[in-house]
Image 1 (cartoon, rainbow, N blue to C red):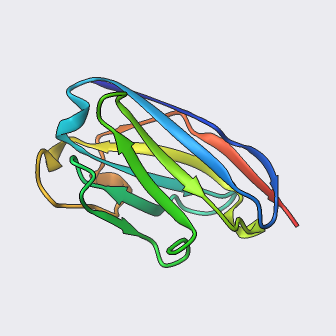
Image 2: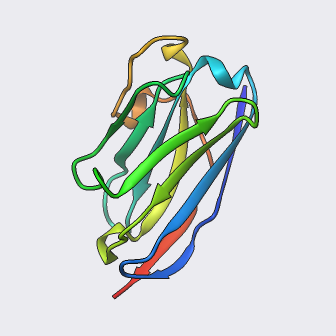
Length: 128
């Protein structure tokens, strides 16, 4: 079992920044890939970005590339999402997810169903 708890969401003006955190417990955090997804009201959950077990590789959705950065601290068992130049269309509930089938590989998945564990989500609202 893996438990994931997100934090850091809130209300920010367009052009501002936020940093989300996701603290993991349970299985050995440094073994598996992590990702961030988001879901806006009335829309499907969409991929934001992912990071390999070592942090050596990252992959982003085109909509956030150049603005968002994923990082991880395997000592603190935490993955981060630094969000800069925020836009109103970034408003959503943000979820972190763990992919235990990617243990110590460079595979990064973008489909929600391929992730094994999810956090409860944290709301990000960007005002115009």
